[in-house]
Amino acid sequence: MISFGHRTRVGSFLWRSFNAQPGQAWRFVLWSLVEAAPAFVIGLAIARAVDAFTAHQAVAGLSWTFLLGISWIFAAVGARQVVVTLAGIVEPVREELLTATVRGALEAGRNDAAAVTRANLQVEVARDAFTGVIGSVKAFVFAFLGVVAGVMALMPELLLLVLPPLLLALGAFLFSLPELAKRQHAYLLADEATAESLVRVTAALGDVAASGDEEHAARYAGSRFDDQRRAAGKLAGVTTLRTVVLGTGAWAPILLVLVYAPRLGASPGVVLGTLAYVMQSLTPALFNLASGLGESGVRLWVTLTRLRAALPPPPQETHRSEGVHTELKGVTFAYGPQALPVVDRLDLVVPEGEHLAVVGPSGIGKSTLAALIAGLVVPGQGRVTVGGVPAVRLHKGQRVLIPQEAYIFRGTVAENLGDHQPARMRQALDAIGAGHIRLQVTELGPADRQLVALARAFLADAPLVILDEATSCLDPAAEAQVERAFAETGCTLIVIAHRISSALRARRVLVMDGTRIVTGTHQELLAASPLYADLAGHWDPRLRQVS
Image (cartoon, rainbow, N blue to C red; front, side, top):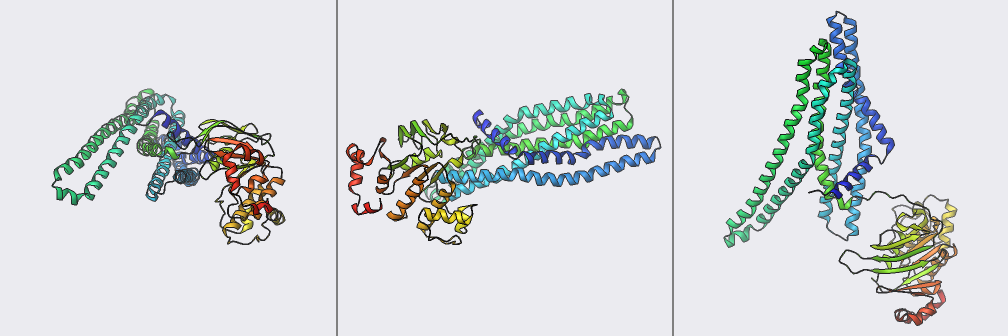
């Protein structure tokens, strides 16, 4: 059963996806109008042509016939452009779902290629179903508008014969969609349970034969078949009722027009034209809508409901802060509802221009703290703000986070550094101590890869820079050069320390000791934090020369 919350999220995602590119959506609508030209012209042309030929006005009759033919040429051109623009709407949705699905698997730490493949197949199903839904809704809407306009042009009174049964049938169908979705979902679950039971029984055939337990295995698999049969029966019942309702709504207008249109004074041409509107435009569009929403629509809804964990949240408006005064107030974060908090009720203020080093044992939560400040994760409780703006809504140009495994694109160093003048690139490389790296180099070792990522961050000129063990592959002298380069820019610099020497270069040090947080200068923490004193005690004094 799809809950209201899930329906809201899926519906919001679909509407947002369709409107993601307003220009493309408007082109789709305009070309759909062109494609729908025969829906408007067909009845009018037939009515006028029949009446003209009946009155022995051959030229007028042929002209209306010629106009009908021309409308199909317009429809062909419009149909081609509709396909192109629809692809421009649907393909980004596919890419967004694929990206979110794979990212979700990676963030969850899953290494299940089969599960990711199954999810990707579901994304393909969603893409095809989304295309079908948009196409069927589009066809019905424009056919309906064309028919209404055409009948109005012929004889407005005939709309009273055409629209009421059609709209009643359409309303009944839309009302039945939630039940249809429920039955379809139940059938899919039963079908999967049947397939799973067959796989289990087949895999255990040797054990079943050896134990003589064939009867139990047959009952186990048979019960799944019975469940699927019952689910199929319920689905068939709803589908049959839907077909009867739609059939009544589609064919009742034909009977009403044949019986009552002549009594209203309609000419033979007007009667034939109205019937053409109903039979050639409206009825096919209605059944196409039923097929699109009843099959593709339900399939899309069920698939997206299964992928709901991967649906990207609505994009939030980002804001530039007035400064980079960073504040964490009452922040608690845990990886899961039952997990112990990594950060617990943390209060922290990092003034603008601060150089803060974060130290602590491996796995204590230093990278989690960095992600919270960068707005990459949302605290379970409390708030994280940068310049008064929630960290998750901070404009991306105002903060840079460089992780230990910094990503480098395939290509040259210059291509990785972005759209800057070569002289500016060389200046950034020199500043962080990477002057030996040439801009056209494509093959880099681990240390140089980190330096290129750091140079890219340096060029971003962000007021908040977070280095999460981003210098782990560098020697102490190179690490010191990098930290000094960023500190001299005047940015707020937060360093997740790889070596305790980073703490000596910082104005202030934050020690993470379990969920206990202690801050102070190096000298203050030697007295106030046994953990920091222990970490400093293991520091090699020979490294003082690069501090």
